[in-house]
Image 1: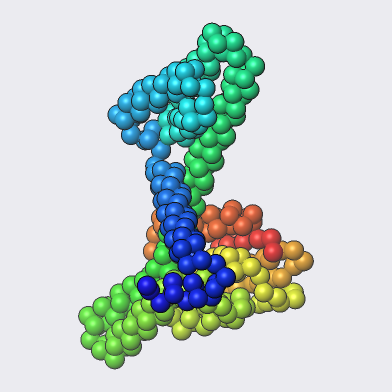
Image 2: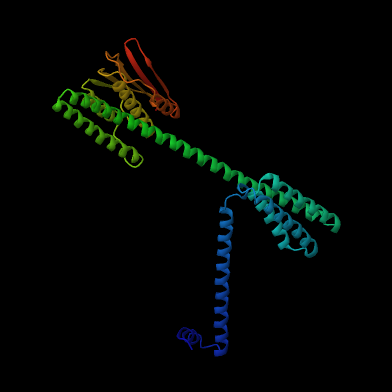
Amino acid sequence: MPRPLMDHVASRPSEPVGVSRKGVAFGVLVRTITSRASRITIAARQSLRAIAARPPIAAITSRAPVMAIALGLSVVLAIILDAVVDGGPALAVLLYCLGISAVRLPLRHSVPIGVLAVGGLLVEGAIYGRLGRDLSLILSACLVFLVAYSVKERRAARAAEAREAVLAERARIAREIHDILAHSLSAQLVHLEGAKLLLRADKTDEALDRVVRARDLAKSGLEEARRAVSALREDAPALPQALRTLAEEFQATTDRACTLHVSGTEHRLPPETELALLRTAQEALTNVRRHAPGSPATISLVYEPGSCDLRITNPAAAERGTPGGGYGLVGMSERAELLGGTLSAGETTDGFRVHLWVPA
């Protein structure tokens, strides 16, 4: 005899040995049946979850009619079985088929199955004189169909929201990429073009200085791209500090003044608001560098109760710059609209101004 069984028998000396053995064997049998039943229950739940996780079969139009016919035949057989046996399994199969048809099939296929089930139950109740019971069953079938259809519509709505979120995230990433590239690459092109002209004039030292500046801009652009990628994980600097850094980069790049004025009570704004203000200032300064070369710039940031006001202005340039035609203003306008703000950009009496107002 195994040691655990001997210990179990020894622990109960008042009972006969035969009775103890039978009790132990019965307990083992009960535990085995219970364990197997629990495993079967878990497997059934996993199967149902797998069925629910499948994509709607309506997306595969070639299989929808076949499944509709199969479910319709299952409904008819369930009604016939209920008429003959008058038991619960047939009704469970009927309700299951209605739920599956509402979830997996389009309305043009699922509604006829529901009508078939209701009509079959009415005919069965009229023939066998069980209209009272069948009427309650019809109400249950309609309820199951509506609940299953509502689950299907909720899933479709969530899928649509997920697609919209993906598209919005793509648009946001496109704006980030444009802002970073426009700010960094355009300044590099200006320096490299100047270096080319200086090399043609045999001014090697000045050309080398331009190339070094272009390299520094490339490094800063790479760092900016890395900061944009990790913006959701790291704390960005305060907006005035970021604007001050932007003004210093403009001065180092163009050898022109860039003045920053900050008024009002400084405080941290929501991350998306600060990012929109910073990107707008960055794009505006990039446009000054491209379209008004040699012109200084002024940045004005005003903290107001419940809002924030940003203005970037520059006087008219003496020399002609690069023609426009990019997506900078479009990206700035999209940022302002997403935050519930307004953006205006246009010529003034003495130059050009970009004005962004956002609630904060």
